Amino acid sequence: MCLENQDINVRSVVWRVLCQIDDIKDRCMRGYYEQRAEKMRAQKACGDQDLMDSVSQEFPRIDTAEQFYLHYKFMYTEEVTDDLLKDVPRSGFGRCRHFEIDPRTLRNPLFNVLNAYAHYDQEVNYGQGMNMITAQILCYTRQPEQKGLRLFSTDFDNGESEGLGPTQFDEVNSFFILIHLMEDRNWRDVIKPGLPGLKVFIETLR
Image 1 (cartoon, rainbow, N blue to C red):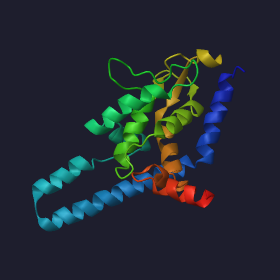
Image 2: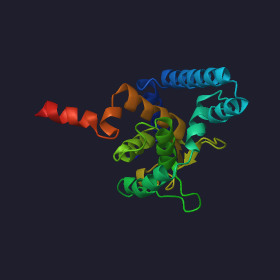
Image 3: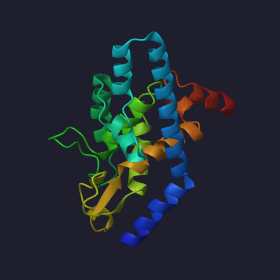
Image 4: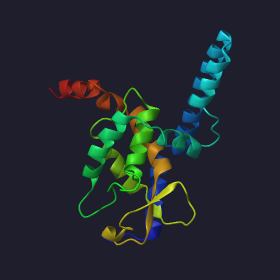
């Protein structure tokens, strides 16, 4: 069934409301600045200016949720990158080509969101299965293409596989929805190393 662009807009808004995205953004920003202030106090007590400068580099000034996302999006860890380059291309659905790796940048919207989360939550990092969850989030938060929006990524097949006009992935809100699922819906324990939450589910079923 073909979806009109206004239906895509409504679907995206519903997801953001159901997941209380504005509250999550506020919580993440508060947590970020609490960590920053705590580290600054600790380094100030040491009286080492070089250490204080390193904290400023680790925790730069961030004023918006978009900047918060970009801060983690552009972090790099070789292990995370290697894992994502293996798993992201496996995340397509049917004839969709949304998640092909861009040969110029070795990135795409799914890679970006997963990389940002892996560096935001280093205890969980990236675990198999997160690619499929995040791919669905990105698909359900797509919006009609709007010129000049830097924080949106253009869909590779322009929505043709679903009968849409040009659409864009909303990386920023998808990132915060993923945080909601992991932190507020208790998926962290299912994904993090050792799979403690999954083991609990299995024991409960037994």
